Amino acid sequence: MQRVIDAEKSDLFDVLAHVAYALPPLTRADRAAKAKVEIGTHFNTKQRVFLDFVLSHYVSVGVEELAQEKLTPLLRLKYGAIQDAVADLGQPEEIGKAFAGFQKYLYEEVA
Image (cartoon, rainbow, N blue to C red; front, side):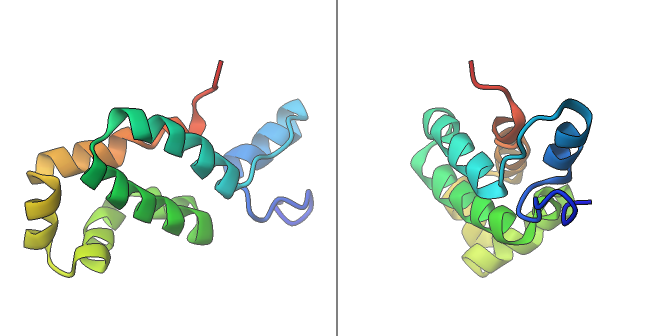
């Protein structure tokens, strides 16, 4: 369906919104850029660096990079070891909260 409406760089969410409501689909890059503004105001510098890394994977790979089971592989990819991620970002609960919490900024409406 993404190919049919020329939205291969968009999420399925945008494809469905286009089909159902004739909304122009946003690319993942557009969504990421929009989210970065909010991330900058709600997360500390070290969290922002990691979330920027996650967003770059989201843009290049897709929404599956935001799945909870991707958190550990992303942390290992970015930091090498989970202990290094914890030393930089805080306790695992905090890391999980930041990973899940920033995602709302990808899809919320900007007033």
